[in-house]
Image (spheres, rainbow, N blue to C red):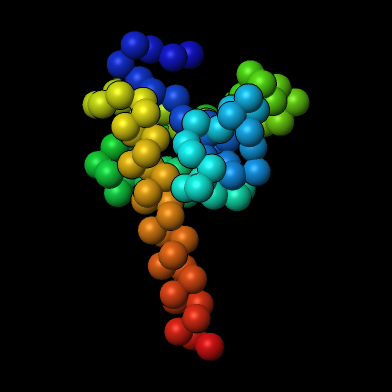
Length: 104
């Protein structure tokens, strides 16, 4: 499935409800609860990537859950890309909150 010039990003990498041993890759203080494929895909697109979605994939540590995966071309290290992705997800969620507050 994975090629040397690709990076695989699972939603669990960014999930604040998961532990490191369950697959979380970003620090808990910047992780978000229940990230989804669409958020990761949108963040990747905003960073200039062309993401591929595999919606029926299961993370090896959570093989009973088909959570899907985002595949990106490798431009930097995986840790650099995951940090950039989580920052974009956080920005997106903050903007959604601001928009919801301003509508009320």
